[in-house]
Image (cartoon, rainbow, N blue to C red; front, top):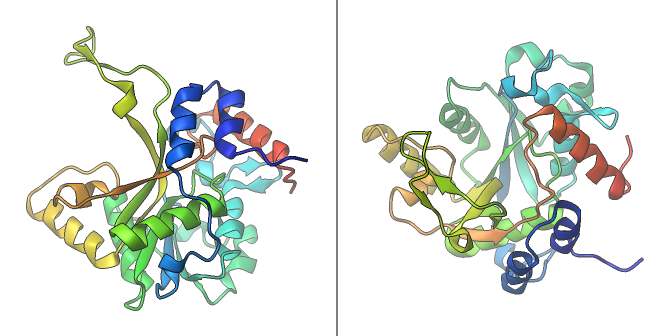
Length: 269
């Protein structure tokens, strides 16, 4: 079977504007499983699994819902623990869920550590970062609600972060975006060619992230994602071209799409 780029696959499956995808592919460097940029780096990840996922309208947080026969969080853990270069993986999860049977085999892996979630996403990231350890030189912050991310995308994002200090997976924005000041009438139409849909993981130098959080806290700045704290300090953040299939599980419809993607990849439970 011929290899099909995930970006081209997404263009066909989800009707992504072909011109946007083609431009993104042209800018994306080829995947390197052992990028020279990462030779001297020590890699870690913080996996955020403390959210409630109220929009999913389920009887449990979405990271524990079954996706093709396995909990969503299990897909995340299997992927990250398969990456040998990750020296530490911190799972941010509430105490009440730590005894779930599917988690027990993972907890025996010495690379896996646990941290408590905070009141806000930023607090959860800070708790996870504190558990990573001092030796880490790059840390990936990833949402458990994105179990479809690929190793290729993660490794390319790590390579960009090694070179630039901070990088985030992102894809060219598909829909036309309107801005409204009052929520009732259109103020203006934004230039789609300049807009990117940001995903996770978001990968940074740990000290850069700590400094960013300190700056945001000191100045009472609102941040919506991890690299925002770097932007607020005036530091560059590299856009790593991701894959449209790396969707965030937010509503029941997303679970159906995710199962379709996994089956298309030949994944089974």
